[in-house]
Length: 495
Ligand code: ADP
Image (tube, rainbow, N blue to C red):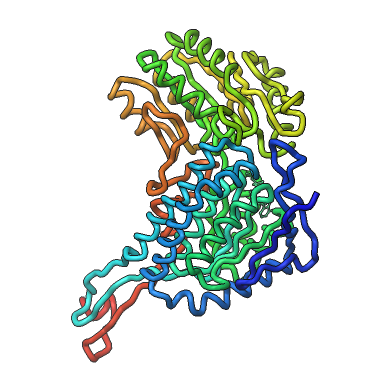
């Protein structure tokens, strides 16, 4: 069967990989459905893309920021028009259900309009000089060519979180989308081109991490790297970037806890638990993967959660009524399977799920049953390591203080949630949970684009997307203008 063939975007031209190599992008719900062939790029393609971005930077940096922002406004409007088309393409490409891929495109729309406002808000700071007749101010400057490396679970939203602030700040970009989801980045790029983005300002190099991602990280003309993905690869990217003192923003894993206290609205907490644990088939860095239950409600909550998890409809995310789509590829299924075995060997109790679905309508896809483990103790690997699949662990506790301690006892620190009606406990949790994001009476997923997004500990290296993305994609310049007509020496002549 014939399928479309996609190319890299370099300097405004769609071109195949220099090597001519391609790879196939398959529908995870049906491996017979080929989305298309994409270039399998290597260092040569990265070199060409970076050269194009470097050339485009000469003029892009001089376009006034409010004008750059107008392109984002047009892109946002185009995304509104194409939302359904792009959402369907995304579900076909990576599996999550249509309601969620519509949300993914919506996030790119929100980001476009939010960041467009930054075009008139790239504020610097003016401050009095310590010397007479001297003016002092600071300005935000673009970095130059920036490299963006993105994952497959939010294939349009995450590229937009990186591209839009980078662009409004005056940088030019080379993006290396995840090998499982290049099409959604292409669709975003089509939108930017239609919105009037000049050639070379964004370049796409598709392909595999070690061949197309690593050369981007190492390229001497790339001034910063923004990466979202696994902690394992993030560590590698961070180390390679550090060798050339390149600023690098790393957004990585999570093992996110939802705490349910005895006084919580249980039905609300159940809705949150199901959405947090099994939305996006558990493949979110913010997914609820530990549910901490206070002893008074643990039995009732567990019973109800298991009953509802069993009823979730698993299938092709394009079909009406489906609640849980496939996992993105075979490797993710194997990881889920591996962690089921680890949990069983550790003594956790499998309450429902635990198997890949392979029969009938599931025969050609990567489907896994929504899985719940009970009797999990905080020390078990299933309670500490990221699965990135539809697998959730239930941990019981006695006191609120214990819950906070368990929630904080892991290496990650991305998202947390507390269900309670007690306002004192809610504020204590907001203060004490070690995480970049805390929700009260809402699940661990649901970030909005204009707040800071990111985490502490092994989740990230201190940067945030959203609110402070502009900080990462700009550098400060301090400016002093002396209008005294004489040499004035700081720290000396004002004494
Ligand atoms: P995920 O598990 O979410 O796919 P990965 O960390 O494996 O996360 O991948 C995230 C992104 O990093 C992808 O675009 C992938 O191709 C890229 N990547 C993988 N390995 C490397 C590497 N060695 N150097 C740079 N990028 C890489």
